[in-house]
Length: 340
Image 1 (tube, rainbow, N blue to C red):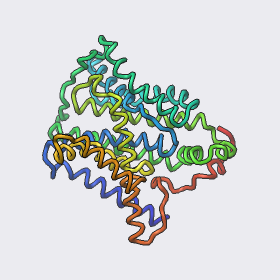
Image 2 (cartoon, one colour):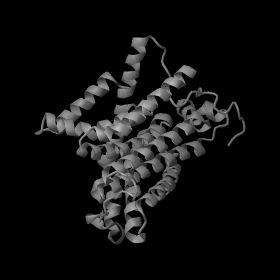
Image 3 (cartoon, helix red, strand yellow):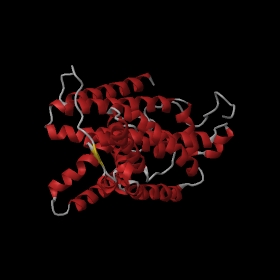
Image 4 (tube, rainbow, N blue to C red):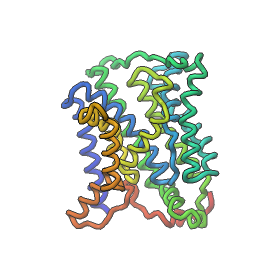
């Protein structure tokens, strides 16, 4: 276990070093794309918690991103907030909406939950267009570009890059701490055997609602950075296609691993660009074929496929899917038998 933890820490350290150095070795336009990768990674992390750990499928996370983006935009326009004040407010607003949706989701499961959340994603753009006095309607809202605070020797683009990825690091750290504790064990137990979990004293209403709220809050943070980076929000930015894209990223990256959020974010940001270069006439065909091939040969996602290959080469036994968690999933409440 100590060796596994050391290996995990070394991989995290390498990832942090790469993220810190990357904007200085890639073209400036790529830095802009990498900021979006950081925002996508935060949103996909929420789906990994909700779907990978909790077993609830959401096709509506684009709606939570829309709320986060508009909270920042409206706050800047109406109240004159600094951008960075809007980010935690967006997280709180989306977390509150997540609690409400999570309570409804308790009555649904499987495709019924997927359709219910999908309807949320479909309805959100029309809702935003309706309240023109607040949201700007079809035209959306424009924001001033981010400027670097005085005394920091970075241009605006590099400053926004580091702020976005620092926020992503905080999101990953807090989520990992949650996963290592009772919260993570409860979610996995409810996903794998809800009857046994309830008999051990796990309250499914509390934990499933909390998972939905935390996932929504992460999507709100992602939406806030999406709006700040683009310096513009409109209803057409947050269509239902965004929700589908986030789920694709989670599945392709590896919905059973935190690393899948990073890999999935890279895929959904850069794969369409690569597909455009491969075949400018039909990039969607290249994109679709690539998705099919990945699902055929690595059904557990890119991260899962890489981990399996490494284990085969090193002849090591399989490791738990959620690397931040090192505790078994079954006896969730053995250490505290009281019902929550």
